Image (tube, rainbow, N blue to C red; front, side):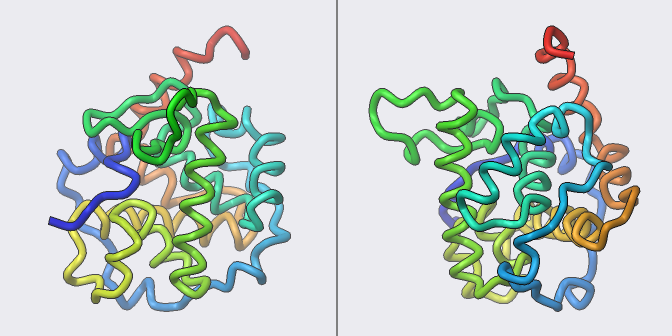
Length: 205
């Protein structure tokens, strides 16, 4: 079994139970250069519980040289903006980071700490993939080592994660006002994750 560096996302635990097929690999073949997308504007179609982090998303993306829409996409499908999200695999926080990414004494649920650890790994995955966002998402979910294999050999979870994330990201990066892929993700189980996020952060609305 491949080492999972970041862990099962809560949103995809819900999604896998529905067994929806992923997109064909051919639909994902065109890489996006990180440098070319870096100056993107945050799309407005993300869930409200994600958009409440807009200022932080812009700051974090600038700090790590990542497109803000890529950062928002990962937050969307990992926690839907719930800073207290926990998975059965032990991943936690906004970016569902596994415990071994933190140093002793760090608060894994602290949004800033969680973002720094998660986005550092996302940046590493994107660099390893040569700017290919699809492979970067796969590496974030399944470990950077999966990038050396054809996607047909990736774990089902990793393929689905990359498929969903890449489709959402492409629509965001294109400047679309709405995201069909995000709506499909919500309909496939992601809405439960977002409802939990909204309940936990209701005090701040």
